[in-house]
Each structure stands twice: as C-alpha cells, then as structure tokens.
Amino acid sequence: MAASVDTAPKQSDAGSLQIRDGDRDSLSILPLSIIPLETPGLRRARMVKNTHLESVLELFNYEGSGSGQVKIEALGQIFSNITSSDSVSLHALAKLSSYDVYSLRITLRQLGIVIDDNSVLKLSQTKQRELDDYMKSFTQQLIFNVYGNGDNMHTHANAFELFKHPDVRRAHDNLRQMAERLGVMLEEVPKFLEDFGDTYLSVSYYQQCLDLISPSIVDFLDVLDEIQKHRQFKNDYNLGRACDRIRTNIKKLVRMVKSRFDDFDQSTDKMWGELTSGRFNEVRS
Image (cartoon, rainbow, N blue to C red; front, side, top):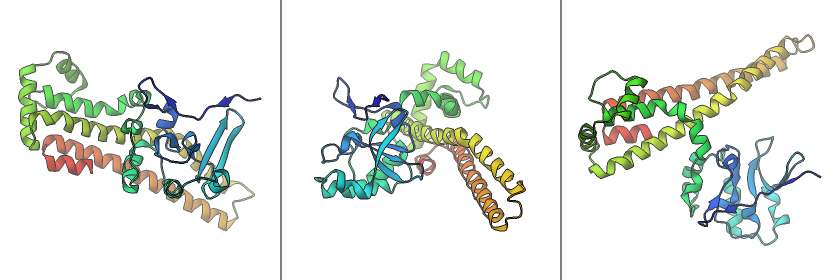
C-alpha cells in the first residue's frame, strides 16, 4: 500500500500555521487551512487545479497513487453540514485563475476574506533564495542609492565594495534625501524599501515561473510543427488551422508577458533616477 501524505496543517511551537513550501510556492494549490472556514474537516483539505485546470477540493493525497478530489458543486454530498458562508467562499475561490500568494493577497481582499496570519501569504524562504539572481538588479540599485556617492559606475563589484565597506554618514544623508523626495519621515523609508522589495520579489517570482515553463513551451510548439508535417495529418485543413491558432496565441501570450517584465524594468530604472512618492506608487501599481 502506498504511504499516505498527510494534508492536515501543522502547528509550530508558537501556534501559527506551518504551510508546506511546495503548497506555499504553488500556482495551483491553495491550502484551505489558511482560509477562515467554519465547517469541520474543510480546513484539512486543499483546493487544487486538476489536469483540466478546474478547481477541485482535494480531501486526501496518497503518494504515487493519486488523490481524492471532489468537485466544488458536490461538496454538500461529502460535508452535509457545510455552512452557507463556507459554500460561498469556496465557490468564489474556485473561480480564481491562480493560487500564488501575490494573487491571493489581492483577490482575498476583494472577496472580503480576512486572513488571521498574513505570514502565510509569503513565499517560502527556499523560494526566496531561488529568486536571488532575479533580485540582483533591485539589490544593486538599493545599495547604490543608500551607500553610493551619485556616480554612474553601477557594477556588481562596486555594489559589493560599497556594501562591504559602507560610509555610514553618507548612507544617513542618502536616506534623508530619499525621505525628502518621497515626502515621508526618515523612519518611514525602511517601510517604503520593504514594500518595493516585496513588489520586485513578486515580479521576480513570475519571471521565474515563465523561465521554468519556457522549455515546455518550446517543446509543445515543436510538436505542433511535427503534427502538421506528419503525412497522416498534413492535408487536414481544420487540424492545420487549429495548430496555427494555438501557436499564434501561445507566442502572443509569451511576448505580452515578457513585455510586461521589460516595462517594469524600465519603469524601475526611471523611478530610481527620479524617486518620488508618485513615481513609486505608479511603478508598484
């Protein structure tokens, strides 16, 4: 018999929920332990996207032999005592396109679902370390703006030296000037930097998601070419049209997403060059 994979949330010594890294970092898994549900048993389950990209409730998972999934519409057959508020919440959550933490922050707020512990809506430490390379641009810009002297020699080596041998007085002056440009008190600057760092981290996360699936996209497009060239299918007009349409749509989507990343990078560079509260809010938005 295959070993069972426990889907119940674990409690830390401090009493806060411990979400598995794989669930926390996933686009397609929502541990219901983070949602304030009233029905006993529901918070031990997960909402997942199945192979058809439909949201279903996963009641259990057995490693190597699949999982027990129930359609949202059929929950009343399993949980006869499900409350109306839980039913409304689950149906709303099932409509979400993604369960990544950044989308959830926005959509849960829009749905009026209040999370008791906001720390569950953060990427795991493991995933954050994976994103270090994507964060280099932000980190270097931050170092130059806090420790730099205003020159244009922005290289990784220079950033490392500035961080390794900081000029504390210059850093204080730079932070004071930054506060003046942002129109905030000096002690509020760290919160601004934290907010923007989190924004940059979210973009880095989506960039990594695209990079991870890019090889599969290339393989899929190659298979479309093979299908159209195959002697059994090359004269099938409708199949050829379908393949052309799929190829065009996928390439269009990839170009669109990549252009968003480019726009963000350009907007970020302009923001650091002309740092104001308005410019920051525009980039974050």
